[in-house]
Length: 611
Image 1 (cartoon, rainbow, N blue to C red):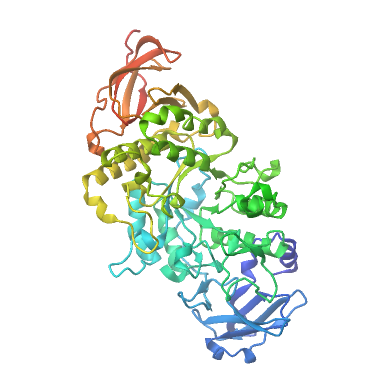
Image 2: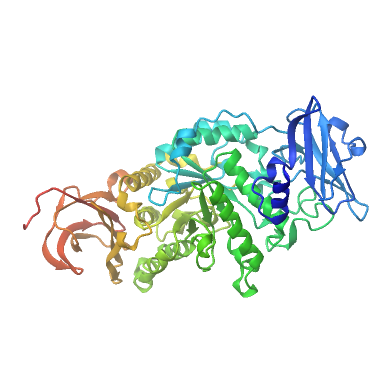
């Protein structure tokens, strides 16, 4: 690392500190070996300990520079050698710490870092990366996955990254998803944290193999035109003694405790900013991730995520800088905020005063929608505008609609179990929910298991209940979910100009008594009528106003028998007739089944009745 990079590190603007700190193979004075570097400015001394010296650091005291960086070169060290840093503090105590910049670690519960050379992987994704984009005018349907519980071996062991490439990628492709989002795979000691309490910010967990096996997984995703997004946790880290907490006997990385029983990063400290910015860049650089979803952004904006505690200006400056440098260096990678706050300009560019994210999770949409579907249909008319409210604010940010892992844990119930009614009703309404979700503007995210209507809450200790796929109701549900993805990708009105208000308008937003909603999605000649009946009432000949004369084809009906529904779909082309309905001069008459979601596509070039 040259002088400029060291200056950048202390200025909080370093994007590649991982190329300097950690363990790197080099040749020095004709000898092959590894140079180790660690930042521990408040330490008295640092020793390197490992398998190569029987964990006795007396032979490997590290050289201290004025900057507080300690380094040492050790010859003849190979990949997979375990090591730690023995820190002597100013209080004359000793701390054995794993390497904050390690590229690999021992399999939990062991905690040592391991030497690993990341170079030399034969990537085959250059064509994919050249055509990659942020997805603003493209379909984005994300499959959120926890690798340790998507599928397991018969003995309940984890599958490796390479084994998951053979099973998960074909599944995701067949179901029509465009991206996989991985719950945090940064190294973490406790399975029950799901990866949200990390020790290794440059270190993919060894639960599923080594770093090059993860590279293989991502490379195979790209060869199948599937993007991969990383869940990233810059707010807090685990308190375990071998990790970042009190790293050199001082609060080098932390600023106190969080509400989750972890340590908060000191986001106002420049060296911490360089650490986290470099970590974000690392995953995009070395592993070719296609985006980063930043966890708990509200806790970056406000102290402990509470607006009453005031704005955390150090956190705001950090996240703007983080997004600025990632966008500058990786302009086609997505930056996604999981943000539950009402803070403005989250998806506005940093140069324009925003936080610099590309997308923000619409947690308001998620909460309002799930509350509505829990209601007895008798009472839904009193809460009608819970489903129209999202479009009142939708164009204030670039929103992504999430039904994530957070909604199917901690006794919240699975998505289908949140639905009102009996067994049949729950299936009907869950299908209706997903038709509404895919028709609504905004990119999509679903947690694994949502696609086949899992009744079980997610449990990280076991695989998904795949046996449900042997039951017709679940088979029909899964087929609808696939068809919704395929329809979403094939109809440009459902994804292009998502964030242009000219691409959406209501035909019927106020029919509370019947709890029927009708809106239009339109881009050029892709013109869709989206209708949702939120009650168990069936209508045989229901008239709706439409903006274009001619013919309409039903492309989605959630109550078709093939989806396990009651039938009552509209099989033939529907023709408009002259009639003033819903402030439109043309009308259609169609069958609307109970609890049904319907998408009609205008068919150009067919002779229109009444003309």
